[in-house]
Amino acid sequence: MADEKLPSRSEDFSEWYNQLVLRAELADYAPVRGCMVVRPYGWALWENIQQALDRRFKATGHENVAFPLFIPRSFIDKEKHHVEGFSPELAVVTIGGGEVLAEPLVVRPTSETIVGHMWSKWIKSYRDLPVLMNQWNSVVRWEMRTKLFLRTLEFFWQEGHTAHATREEAEVETRQMLDIYTDFAVNDAAIPVVPGRKSDSEKFAGADITYSIEAMMGDGKALQAGTSHFLGQNFAEAFEVRYLDQGGQLQHCWTTSWGLSTRFIGAIIMVHGDDQGLVLPPKLAPFQVVVVPIYKSEEEKTVVLEAARKVKTTLTAGGIRVKLDEREGMSPGWKFNDWEMRGVPLRIELGPKDVAKQSAMLARRDRPGREGKAPAALDGLLQAVTALLDEIQKAMHDRALAFRQAHTHVSNSYDEFKSAVETGFASAHWCGSSECEGRIKEETKATQRCIPMEQPRETGACVLCGKPSLERAIFARAY
RNA sequence: CGGGGAGUGGCUCAGCCUGGUAGAGCACCUGGUUCGGGACCAGGGGGUCGGAGGUUCAAAUCCUCUCUCCCCGACCA
Image (tube, rainbow, N blue to C red; front, side, top):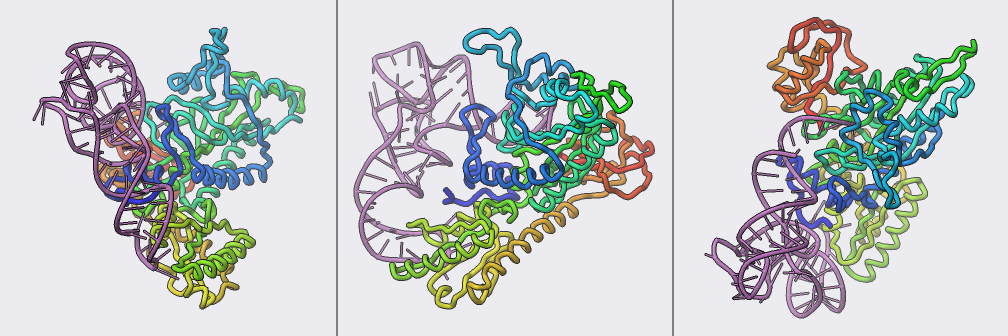
């Protein structure tokens, strides 16, 4: 429960984040190291994220499926890069029912291998393609250093898996899903992101090309908020996923995979949150509006609550998610602070004076103070609230974008670059070599985030070695 | 896994150095007064001091091992 002030965001960003997650009751630490419990308010947020994505997946022809949690250990070994990337962080089951297993099982770190195995049974003809699947599940990766939502041993996500007849089709799919993530981030989460291509060293283990959306957090650090992989024929070859084409030739499929996790909740917290707590984008907030009734006497209480319930009914009928805070024993001021902590986008204060005047006081979460005069009558409330929620959604995005732009520096020298990554993103020419990338990481702690899809066509010189470069990459310290 | 910090009612912490049988504030429960920006008074419940072992007449306190959390690095969505 919220009773004390949070640490200030500017003074101790990390502690601010940790306490906010706990105090807003999004999640709590589980008794196992690195694991968390997602609490009702956090899960409600995740459900809204799920719905926003799932409808986009369905609209583009994907179907949901459920693959098992356990994968035979040998599956992981079948794809060279995959095994190299994931072996160090596997959780392995060696005993089942009291017996040592003939073959150990890994708890899925991701499902490309078992999906590939099943596809080899299901896919025989070009007529079976494309296969467009997605699953909502959790996976386990034995990370060394964990942080609530951002990196836990088990995390919830969706993983999409598709198989195609041609390289072109698979590439289009990979890019399409990146676009969907971008659209979701920008329009639903109000988080401006940079879609781009990862360097070889930052690529998914087993992918030919990895794309990501990169977001800037409130401390200037980068967070990979979603990824889409073009897997080439790597997994199709490893698992013999083949089909007969129209000419009767046996061909390997081209596959993709793409994912977005509960880490995204961390991004929402760190992009929009302030010293008062969470600031949730209206499209994803569990409650878009909270109604706080204000009264002294029993008579006032009766009148105010009746009006408040009417407000709730009106707004709910208009498709708005409303919470009416009828809790006894907390002062209005306490409730204001509590809902600010939880990031509800819009607050309606309803007291005897408002009821008498047939009006309501509105306060936006994304900026201080109140919206001055409330709408004249309750009749106009739904319209006013709808309009305000749209405004808030847009203002949150614009503010985050302005912040990112203010903290993104186009660096043309290594000195500029080094100071840029202290506070945000550096956009710099890079020769593409992993040597330069590695040295940059060592010397500045900044990693290559992505080569943005959209950028001016210009030639330049690698910010480190000076060799010619055709495009700029974003570098930043990352979560 | 290396370096640093910390585990004492739900939370923040005092007590530990110098062993003597657990305390404060907040939160929670009850009653009353309050209520337009984190109310007040009175009464009450709740802790085998992270866990295990050891030393001792006696351990929150001393010793050993272990688990967990936070910060900084290596690994990563």
